[in-house]
Length: 107
Length: 120
Image (cartoon, rainbow over all chains, first blue to last red):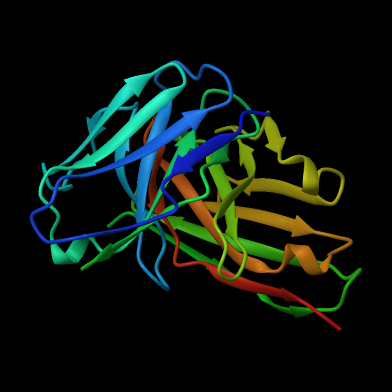
């Protein structure tokens, strides 16, 4: 099974800050990686697919990069509405696996 | 409007069975792989099962193999998850999910989730 490791597990940043979340795969997943945002009590919301493709309707301050085993989600200018938990997911091979999540808090 | 609506969750005793359903609308159901993803209380997301457009291929996470069965009825636009031999660790919100596009693209469509509690 491919293990997905996210870091940090929590982060606190100020409005306007540039924020980066890292996701590492235990083996190469090419570019088959997605990022989700989840707010309490809600279903996840797809932000990025295929490593760097921005899902329709998602603000352009979100971007993704990487390949192989190392990936990042960047929020270029953190907004109050970005307070949430973020998950990466690989869909290169079964079982599909998610990272453990990164909780983003606004200072 | 593209929509997924789950139903069937509830309280079940360990060892019991339950069937979850997901009603799809607003898209061509038989053109998409469909999935179940779960989230235990206060925990992260866990993929559970996938089924191909025509139902000919099914995949499961190891922890549910032999106990859960994913199925679909393309005539009724309905996805199901039959869960047997339930354990406390199966307690979670179960989401029905669909890829954003009809290629592998991450889950762009989610239901609201249905809560399964396994407890005596």
